[in-house]
Image (cartoon, rainbow, N blue to C red; front, side, top):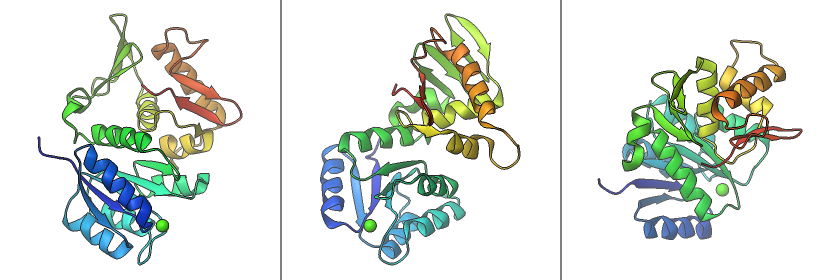
Length: 233
Ligand code: CA
């Protein structure tokens, strides 16, 4: 397989150059843009495999690039890199079609991990055979997204559409604490009227299916007063 092409749209020179070096060292082919207009053009014309996108940029901002790329139906994973960590920004980013969100400063290791996850979800990674077939190992169960089920101890257990959506949302953001508001927003959207209790109920159901010991969860972890997170796999 040919090298994975990454577009970095970031106006902070030291960060952009450091990312370029780190990614090139990992074998990625890197393109850079230091302003929003160039970044948007490269995103649309050069069809990179993954885009790292700053939000505050000279020229057009990251949100507008994100919107334009999604309107053009370009299905490339986009990871937002931003100094702004407020929940509203993250929700806004996800609403506009971002795949992930990293708050500066972040470690290169974490970025590489998130990129691999985003690429795998998008089917653009060599090691994605299982996922493109709709299967993924979580803990010691195998989830079959195509078959709406998982296999635990050799037993097939059915998954509802919502349980699968919820699980996919967590899988795209391993190790990140997700508030109930974010989960509601992304998994339920505007078409239903769930409450925080709806989420808790679904998480409990998922734990019963996924966890070795649902009362002492190791996969879907409660973050008290906030929400939940998926333990990194
Ligand atoms: Ca910036």
